[in-house]
Amino acid sequence: MEAHAMGSHGIVGSSDGTEERENSSINMFSEGVNLNLIQPSLEEDVSTEILLANKKLRSTVWKEFELTMLDDGTYKAICKHCKKDFVAGNRAGTSHLKYHIGVCSKLQSKRRKFGSPKLDIPIFDQQRSRDDFSRMVLAHGYSFNMSEHYYTRIFLYNLQPSFKLVHRTTLKDDCMRIYEEEKLKVYQLFEKQSCRFSLTSDMWTHTEMSGYMSLTAHH
Image (cartoon, rainbow, N blue to C red; front, side, top):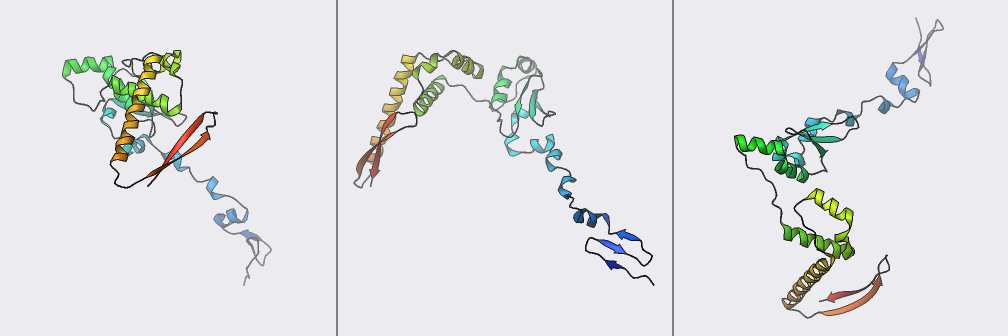
């Protein structure tokens, strides 16, 4: 009869002097092997099909683009007609892809030949974009000269060639017009209040050393 005893380090001793180890899974823990290192990474299993199933990519524009994953793990949207590639992914959005659909020469040629399906392509509005540019200058304290900076014009032209930047004096007039419109909204808001209110003011300095006076309404 052989007598076996379990040692503290997972060693099994026998009467004939031989030693046996436990099964390999137990030996891994006793030798300090991290099983997570030998398990496949879930990120490596992410496929193009999974990304396409994401809600943010369920757009009609994907009928005209092919989603491809590069070696570095990033994604590119390749036009099925002219083969140009664009940034793609869950955070990239589809506005640039919709714009390309409207200007792709090969796609437009096919549409003229076979007919054009209806797509949800945004319509450019010069006045709205001009006001948005003015609000950006107001909100971030940019210089009015920004509208005349060389690379500002190049950047905006590449985004939307139809957008016409205005002169810095016109930009200043636009900002003052928006300021007066917003001030009128505040007046109208106070006029609708049935209760009384009081105003307190406070002075503070921005991190860029610009001085401000803030008003707080108590009601």
